[in-house]
Image (tube, rainbow, N blue to C red; front, side, top):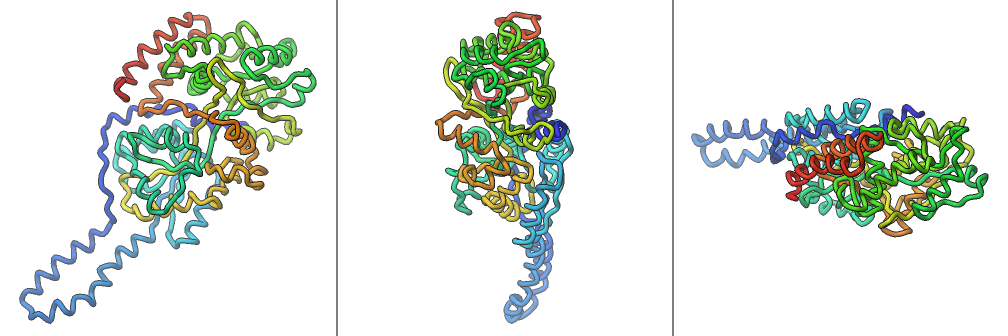
Amino acid sequence: MAEERKNMLSRRDFLRGASVVAAGAVLVACAPAQTPVPAEEPETPAEEPTEKPEAPAEEPTEAPQAEAPAEEVSKGPLSVIHGADTNDAFKTAVDAFVEETGIQAEYEVAPTGYVNWQQWMSTRLASSDTSVDVFHCDDFQAAIYGAAGWLAPLDPLIDEYNIDLDDWPKTLVTDVSVWDGKLYRLPWGNDTEIFFYRTDLFEAAGVEPPKDWDELVEVGQALTDADAGVFGIGLSGAKGGMLGNDIQHWTNQAGGAINNLDHPGSREALIFYKDLFANHKIAQPSTPQDDYTAVFNGWLDNKYAMWWCWDGFYGAMRTNEDFWADQVSAFLPPMGPDNATTITGCWGWAISSYTEQMDLCKTWVEFTARPEIMKTQLKKGRVPARISLWSDPEVQELAPSSVFLEMLADAGDLVKARPVTPSIQEIYDAAEEPIHAFLTDQIDVDEAISQAMDKIGPILERDLGG
């Protein structure tokens, strides 16, 4: 089970292939593959001028034959590439699509591991591969692939099918699916970091969920038994995306961000993060080496009482029969120096700008946006993107973290997207390396921030103009 979750969430290892944007691919107009029709038609008129006027009158009888190739193309096959879950749970949606529309679909499962999948997809799009039609698209690819000209804007599709985007979390649409004013992806699932806690350990210690950072330390101390290897909170400080995400949600709460580390709040957050394991000692001393898998396994071994991480892990906890005893819940993120937000993201459907089957692609995106089709994700315990589904009893039973997403929504604007630029991986790398050196006592916090911003500044200047 841990390995399954590792595969699903290894997307957090981020975009090693981001530099492919430099290839400067150009957005091309999509045209149906009907070249046989125009190729044949010039020959017929060439012979007709020698005929009397009756000849044109006979031409309409041939028109239906000229349309036949177009009808053939309209039935596919449509290439559908799924890039998150690696089993056949998703195939039920593909089968339903084929049955309803009569359009044939070729379902491809992307390579296991996010980095492998990213490189594979980037290579295909960079080569203008017309065999790519629609694909499951990660947060940052709307910016990376959209800026490169590899994605078709979905705004016309939204208007054509009257899709109500108000039923999607605004941040999932405007912050991680739009680039340069164009919608390049329609969110399908929802990934949000929530604050898990062990209700049994809290009860035994006689403490309540913390409401701010100071209380977090106090509660964490009451829950920690270092001699027994039990800590108040688990942290994932390993480089490769995990540390970047941890940096992001703590700095967010202090008013900063991973791409704004020279903000005073970011500095405060970085010091606090290190203090959790180095001074307060309520987190494991191995924090700088621990990735998600290490912390998740520790969670299953009853070593942690709190964990701020992706909601998808909740389903993995519940399906682990050796662990689960209804002893895990979640609370609203404690208030930081500036706010009480957490970070969110999603997967969604995008259309390749090189497709030769645009009408079929649009049909697919509209089909997958329907609530009943979105619910096929429940087979993997994933939460659908549409807000109206979070209160659905079936969704709450099979994707139980939807209850916590609804709790966050009811509490106000408590979710925030990670910074999105076409060079997000460069920003994560630029931040993680010196911050990790700070966590391991190689440099102080100010030097870490200086080194990070020396690299991040020019990236932002290049991508965003400042």
